[in-house]
Length: 380
Ligand SMILES: Cc1cc2nc3c(=O)[nH]c(=O)nc-3n(C[C@H](O)[C@H](O)[C@H](O)COP(=O)(O)OP(=O)(O)OC[C@H]3O[C@@H](n4cnc5c(N)ncnc54)[C@H](O)[C@@H]3O)c2cc1C
Image 1: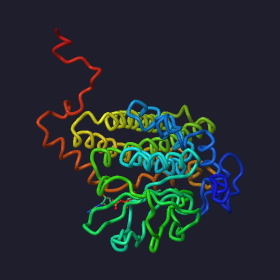
Image 2: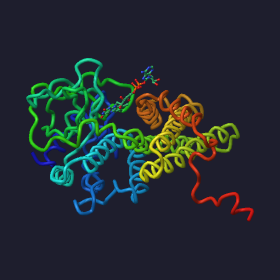
Image 3: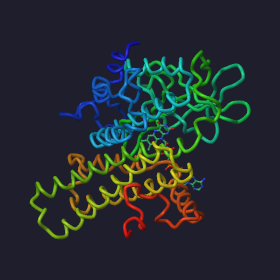
Image 4: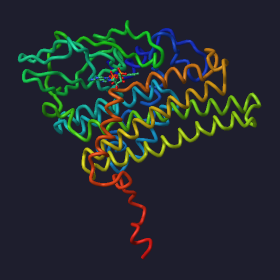
């Protein structure tokens, strides 16, 4: 099936909201098919690939600022689309890093032709995905975004010795996806569901890298900067809605409103600076892996708190009107609150703190600012 027919099949049957967001109707299910089609037409689905493979090289360290800006822009426009795009980018980054050349080239062609990728790692405590000796798959993945729409999922599957192997499987639209449990507070249109791979046989060229490559550091933990960039877009969307409401209602001159909006500005700008630095440190991989991860975890803690703060501040400034379905804040805050839930936030914070407490350097010297002259040079 061509990517074109995939995208028309993928269109949400219930999508009926007027205007730019009609394709992302926020019912209990849905999929932003038109937005994904626009990303494909703009070349964004191929953009993570190297230029030699038809992309814009966005996964290369030198282009990390461009990738970050794109993730934030797409997230600002629609957090659900940002989540799907981030999964697509993550899958291609893993393929480019770990796959054999021939496999990477074939999958790059798929991406350039518009196939949607994703990374499906999460699974239940019992019944997760297993690859048995006969190359057959058994088990499920849960919380799989784009289930039924992603046709090139990168999954992790346990092998006999307990390690996990990355596979990029070829699925048809709708195949094996169960979205019935995705009745959720926000991010409804990400089509996040359960996918049962039981009985599917492994085909040639579907294995990516060696067992446990998926967890190699710092790439695994430090890669969190990408979802932070998307979350930042969600924070900026809430901030702009907050501003527009105060302006439209003539309440922008009130000092209490200004104080709340000012705090929201600080939260958003702090996030922007931290995400930019986290992205650069992660892309450079120049520092010790634990130190890079600690910085990304610091950014995770800050962005999560900033997201919760901008939601609360906007709720208090806008008041009850912001809770009406007709107000843009209503969906933006549900989507952001839901997308802020990422794996092991306590571990991210305490892991970062433990790293700083165990370091020989004082905290201010952990991630030196390369642009700043050393104190000795300043006084000399
Ligand atoms: C919109 C959306 C789309 C998603 N799409 C995908 C996808 O495509 N592919 C995919 O693989 N996953 C996906 N996920 C799942 C995601 O990767 C995480 O698994 C999920 O968001 C974890 O959130 P959680 O709050 O359940 O985290 P948890 O890690 O379970 O955290 C919940 C709480 O428990 C604490 N905690 C965690 N571990 C422990 C422990 N061992 N002991 C004590 N406390 C603990 C945490 O610090 C936190 O306070 C998606 C999630 C969202 C929100």
